[in-house]
Figure (cartoon, helix red, strand yellow):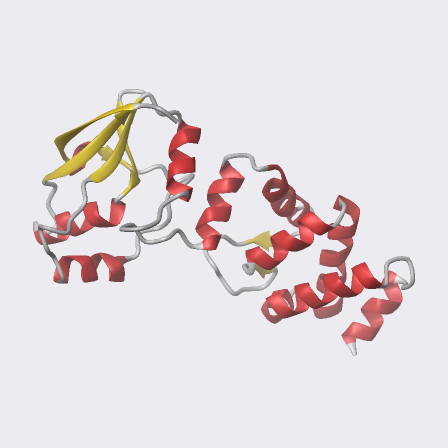
Length: 212
């Protein structure tokens, strides 16, 4: 990925956040950055100039901390502005954050991969949605929500669409969509059972046994 860039100061009101690949703002983290501020250690906010706008792909928490230190008002911030990046380039760079940046959490990575059209992640979400199961990128523990996405992803890449759907239908039928039923332990255990005993069990009988 080759592109031109330059360092320049921009006002925070000029900077945009793309919610399709960016994570939600962690206010506690912003406060911690602001309270432990050190001008020497502050990195420039990484920005992509695309479609006439400046899109932040790395550094939105630093930008928010600048505003906290300026009593909530917009202010000038140091930026490294990249030119020629596409939306997909920005999303990929967001996923690759490491080092001085805080590593991107897995659920945030899966959200970005879904919006990038990653085949297996789209399968993981869309098949679940077809029976009312919500693949929750925010980590919500609620009825019919699953948030142990790394485990779920391993299951969807192991199974065919039909097998993955069967696994989800078994969980929903056996435990009525309770949050605890979508734990990593249950998904991992059930997917392992279905793999080892493929063709040797009856779906309806398995549901009855699990209900007990």
